[in-house]
Length: 169
Image 1 (cartoon, helix red, strand yellow):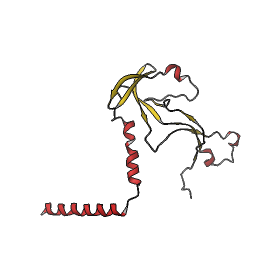
Image 2 (spheres, rainbow, N blue to C red):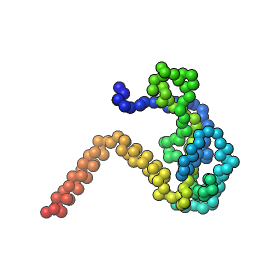
Image 3 (cartoon, rainbow, N blue to C red):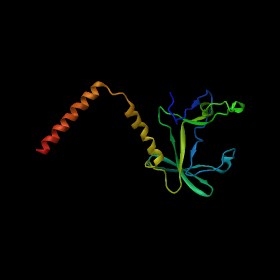
Image 4 (cartoon, rainbow, N blue to C red):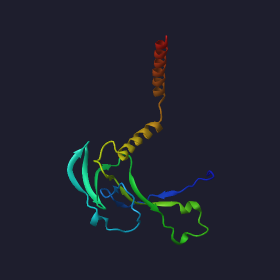
């Protein structure tokens, strides 16, 4: 049963879609335009042959600003997708439910992404890269716990409590 005030939707993962690996970029800005553009005519990233903290640095310019970035792979077990609102065409009328209006479809996929910084070199400490650490944290939190692991943790906790009691005496 749907809770009041919540919205549901769906994503259609269709079979064959374009693979945009090597062409997906995360820019440190907002572009208030949604439509066709000859991006490749103006945005031309190039390698600097510089490596910082294991990241191969690339350089590009966007609207006169120098950008420095690195291409990283999507972690194993995960995939990158470009999704868009599903075009319902003439089906969109007063009888359409909110659920049907909240349908999305996969338009492309990617295996790596190039992220860009304005004023500094890419680093392992960049917020974008650090966000990927949460994937392993989430995996650990949601991983089933075996009975023997609980037993080991219980014994270890008991020993810690005994040590604390001895220190207080």
